[in-house]
Image (cartoon, rainbow, N blue to C red; front, side, top):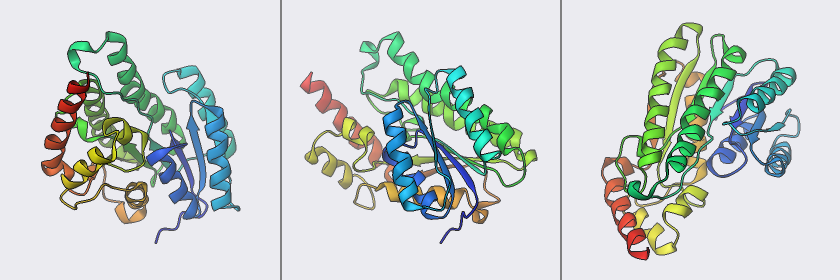
Length: 269
């Protein structure tokens, strides 16, 4: 359905889970795809899988921590040397762990803010000169915690709310250059590290599925398809949008489900 032949796509955090699914979708659509994450072995494995999907494409991988600005700049320099320009940036670096606010250390709160919010700013700012022309599309990967209060998630809620406002602010500022900036908000996505942490048993995951209006947990492909659309010319008049990809979970089921998961976590403690 989507043709990204000859387009250059960079997926930060693109070596596992939702972000790897997005990288694979762009590779399947013909794009040259670069991925980045902290561990070189995961980068190498992701690049190998992308090259197998699109043997004619130019697949790249760089290793950096979004909290390390010097390493991040070096990674973007390498991408610039290889691609010269970027057509699509997917900013998906994230950190999360369940923690009650009263027990959350200052360092734990700061770590999530540094990865999710400050890291997102670093990534988008470094991408800007490579995308500063009409047609560039930035896709941030946010989370429902940005606008739905959830127990054990105060740090993530604060960070992702900042990410969503960063999306809106940069859409406003960078629109004149022709750069679109949007956020996707995945709901409960099966077989991902984040979902497995929050719902660590089959019974809990089934309970979450029943709280989704569409009565199922999502798949990585659901988010990947949304990314292909929101970055494409079909969405050329869409910017500054926060788009849930959650089967309607944010309409009410999310609060109830996460409240129950929070109670269970507290009882285990």
